[in-house]
Length: 49
Length: 539
Image (cartoon, rainbow over all chains, first blue to last red; front, side, top):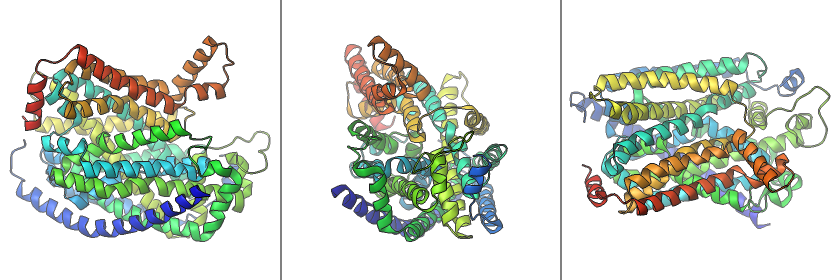
């Protein structure tokens, strides 16, 4: 049955991609947070737009 | 759930699991308090100073969109529709990928540098469109999140094995709401993106772990065989499934597009990104999470179904599946409880606490973003434009915080008192459509069609409210009335066939787009070309 095979592939590929995304986002997201805090510190006294 | 059901649904949740959950919640609260010092301006409070990088953007968007409500309604879809429900996630992922690659709507919107969608309405269509757009957005959005708190609490009650009769659900609702309110009110968007990051990490690990455990416990082949046995071909083919069908599939594609490119909480992430290029990359990568957030919980619902029919058949009658019947006086329970009970029985001590913390993380990351989004729209797009005197930054932040608390009070009350028969996903789709049908027309028309006029935009926003007809308590009587006009028997089944929520949603989208185009052509805006040019210059 075609649909069974399609959903099996979808599930396996989705889980693999999700695991990869989790690892990448965890590492690079932490760097982004540090950058965000530096930027907010620098702009602390800048007037609001 | 009465006593017999509570006994059958007993879970592995222990004191260790409670400790893990409490520790996690305290860490989230501490983060909210720590970043409070950065929320000193309106831009930093509602757009994190527009300094969010790509990967933090992916984490915060994914954390927000993978809410506990998402997990619950997709599990419900999987439980009731089998693998055929996977089409919802696949379509959402593909559409989001298309938006990321093309930059449709989100690219030009970020270039303009607006803080909210109604602010764009004002630049393109004038102030009265902004105010009406703000009202429709806030009404549709707040109605949309009306059941979040209750459904999230049902997960916790189910997974911990508490009885939903009596105090448990209202007490959990109150505790969770209080926690979310505290750190959202204090930290604004900075607090939201940072906690979203933590929540994304915990949630992703928890989801992957739980999925692998579910497969190992039930068996990969068994899961597919059982769905084939119970549902037949309809358990896999969405076009042939009695729960879905071609009309429903088209509706899901529309929802996939508006969910990523028009929905305000997603757009709030767009507007907080550091550049339009970063926005496109954020959407391209987030397409994976947009698909996963629907596919994995749907798979859990399927596993819960297999668990109920194969492993614990005595639970079957409570959910209306398998063989056997309930005794006299026993009432069936919502299918929403099936997945948390399955998780509570499947996962060992410790892992259960981690997964529960992940789910609560999902709950919190959605609530904080939604609360902040609706309250900031009310302040920025309704109250501030209507005032003669300019509203100070401090007053805006103060008002936003007050509204967060008021909206929190509303969702607490709505969750306790609303009685509707729709699946949660269908309820959310229709309440969301009250806003997004009009917004979709205005954004597409405003950004890509020079002939779009202010009158067309105003009428389209009003026409979008027609989606409210899709809500169960309104749709059923209307469908029955239509049936009586045609002398057909006004049964519930005939009413549901005549006016499904998907059909009402699609008709509402078509009606709104037609109104927008026709009125724009009939009443063109003389300033249209100039305004478009000004808007694209960001003036």
